[in-house]
Length: 231
Image 1 (tube, rainbow, N blue to C red):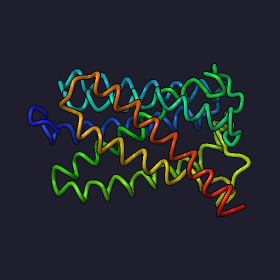
Image 2 (image 1 turned 30 degrees about the horizontal axis):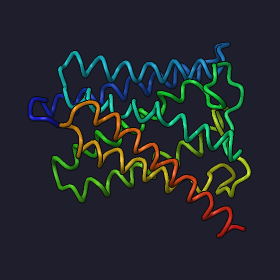
Image 3 (image 1 turned 120 degrees about the horizontal axis):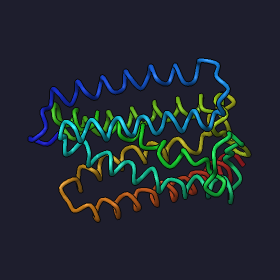
Image 4 (image 1 turned 45 degrees about the vertical axis):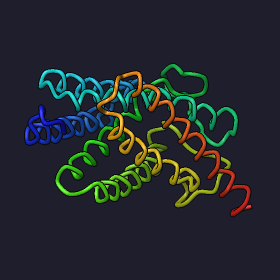
């Protein structure tokens, strides 16, 4: 992280926040309370983003806060690919979950992508700091693959989203989307590294460009797998 950040403290705070969030997930999702799943997921998404932002501001972790702003912007823009995949290609479904929708996309998705993107980018920055840029890209790539495969395999159980009309692996994992999601993780980390010292306007433009990269790669790999390979 930046030299003005206390590296051991940022690591400790990062671990504590994610332990707290894990406990919160168990409490909100596992305890049987009559609240719609969309509301529960919104509470978790809001809680994570507020935890990251508040701790970053209180501790004066400037790079931490800038990273959060960057991934939150990407998460906001990710509404468009999700909307396209669900409304135009009809290969992604966001069922009624008790929360408002942006087009066909559940509203909490505007902040949900920030969770994995902050986590893997933060870890990537630490690996780069301790080892090398090449090793950090390897770690971020593997971490992106693991996180997004796990999400695709489990989120349907929460009635959050699920794929349809595409080739699936193990009944729930849409094959076409894994490479685009790994590209999303790698590009988020790589371009934050390249633009973190720039003006916030550059971060906004870069976040939008990353969304377009994801949208384009999702469309390409959908066409490749569903119209060519698995025709």
